[in-house]
Image 1 (cartoon, rainbow over the protein chains, first blue to last red):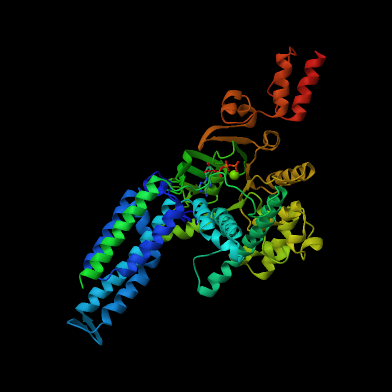
Image 2 (image 1 turned 60 degrees about the horizontal axis):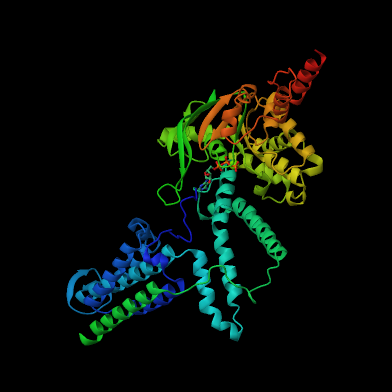
Length: 267
Length: 287
Ligand SMILES: Nc1ncnc2c1ncn2[C@@H]1O[C@H](COP(=O)(O)OP(=O)(O)OP(=O)(O)O)[C@@H](O)[C@H]1O
Ligand SMILES: [Mg+2]
């Protein structure tokens, strides 16, 4: 029933995106997001679109899976598009009742929707090519300067890791409980909203109980192995930026330069 | 009347890189009134197989028929019949006590019949009957919160919840896991009583060859998603080699007899239960 959910959505592979240092990837992703917001003309959008497509192709993640990550947001994108379509004054190209569709509106609608699509695709590229463990590891490192002002970087990262670790377990558990209650005549798929919500009580109660039980057991197991937080802990695989990462940074610098040139010189 | 699997295959997470084929072209039938055990190494597909029997997962290839009704029939007429047929199969999962959720044992057992739309009177009757079947005294336990009961009692309550659906076929996935020896023994005897006295058809997934030898009339051995052996336990346990390849061994008694024989005692090695073994040894020693 729930088996099609792939959370964390990591797609194992060996492409250069997989091999890059996760910290660098996160940093560059932020830069890319800034660049997405700087785009304002067809050439700039074209350039960024081409770059995104390049990354998608080189990541070796099947296109189908990546496009699937757009699906939950399709309505928001469509809505944004329509709003922009009807709300920009300018050269009229069609009239639908009270709505005036203008050339500017159409252009703006396409641009803003593309912006959303790029944002989603780029950030899912990060999660597709970085294992959750590496991701939290990088987070810890990125946040660690904050330790000086009392930010519990290690604890936050550990919480993330544990949460991620238990997502598949809980999905499996939910699946099992749903099946067991379905075998007792529970119906999750029919009735009005209220009935359906009520139908989930027999799933949620055992699920929470088992989550608490697991949390309790895990805490005990960690303490039994003398876990006491981040102080003085070393890592088995410490992160190290290499040639690949420097190359990626340089390419990004070139891309940034090109984009800024396109944006500011063309006006 | 029977549950029939016809060329059933099942793949988890189809279409993702985590694809895992759990069953491959399994064909078998569970006759009404029989007591069938399913054995196999961990990960061999036992749980997947029994979930097909109960219609809880739809095969990715082949079909499942309960009393000649195809469970994955999606035509309008077929759907209702399939739902009806699915009702005939009760499924007790591994650690069923984890699925209790109501505030009292009685309410939890009543959950199934209530979903069926039974009248209050009928629900009360079914709860009484189900608790009696699993050996939980109604007056002592009906108002207890399940979370305060012992592990074995919780499990009984959970099984009663399934029995209250009045299934014809009862599937139990490792019902004795995590119980103490006395609890195991009691649970198994109750399952046998369900079969012998109350006429349930039983499908029992078990890791214990001793238990299978004592209780089952027929056993299936799974290996890597295929059914490699399907026969009476005494015949299956004779296939030492095939068993070993499947990660299983005959019951201790049988292995003990085989050892005696290797050491030179002229004793037949086809005994699979303790009593049979004892008889065989006594006879051999007397001669
Ligand atoms: N929800 C799932 N998603 C993906 N793969 C699964 C899932 N459930 C089971 N599998 C895989 O299918 C195979 C068969 O699993 P199954 O649970 O049927 O084994 P089993 O014989 O019941 O094992 P055990 O004796 O440990 O209970 C295993 O290799 C397992 O990894
Ligand atoms: Mg199992």
